[in-house]
Image 1 (cartoon, rainbow, N blue to C red):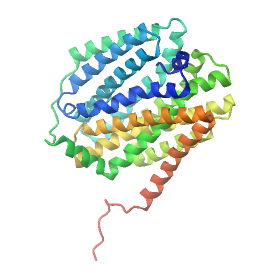
Image 2 (image 1 turned 120 degrees about the vertical axis):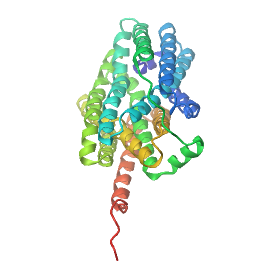
Image 3 (image 1 turned 90 degrees about the horizontal axis):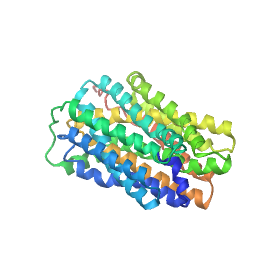
Image 4 (image 1 turned 90 degrees about the vertical axis):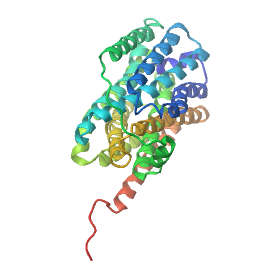
Length: 367
């Protein structure tokens, strides 16, 4: 929500990237603390996350300086780590059927991507009315949601998990089926966060956009992201989650490479297809794929979503810092070439290695 407002703090491109990455860094650092809680105390983690988010929004609404906003971003990062991982773990427990879970997670992540992408629209538009308005209103909504979760949300039975949490996580990281998806999540989010953290200044200087106009431009990625994440579950059930993930990676990477061209029409086309690819990858297929592997090999533990969140937030660290550094010492186009090239190259690599690998599910022929 605060993304289009960052340039008004008058920091350099690199400082803006670091401010953007603060939330992701805090999510990564606090994730190990949640490893022992996620399979047993999901509802408590949701309440903690909502409470910390309210505190963060209060800081945003009452200050307009760099250091307090760094603190607020950090609190928001801890809150997001608790909310996202525990939310997916709850879905893992509730939906045991793979096809139903794929659709449910696609719909749930439609809500996540809606918040991530529509937040700048909300924040930038209401900020032009009053600088505290977007944060104060959202704090009230978060507080209401916290009350509803405490009163209305049932507590599901905890999943049986292994006693050695660290060993379990190490084994999951060593699994190729999981590590491939985690790297895809990291690169996809690095590319989109690089774009988001540098777009505001680029559009303001190139096209003379205001904060409100920049925030409305984010609709070009948010709307197709929401649509793609909503339909990716059914498409994954029909064509396979791996195929949809590869298509999402390739589309997002290719159209990140194509833009920017300093032409509004070209930017619109690229933003639409970048959002489509991101929705198919990050929100529509990856959680369901990871959940299926966790069920099949690791007893259905919710820790898989902690790893997923760490991968996503690692992208949100690498993307803004690397992208803003490249933009500061070169230009916006060069930053997009670097991130788009990494993403599209990985999509090609996954496609080639997956097609060349033997299919383990096929029975061996008798000699």
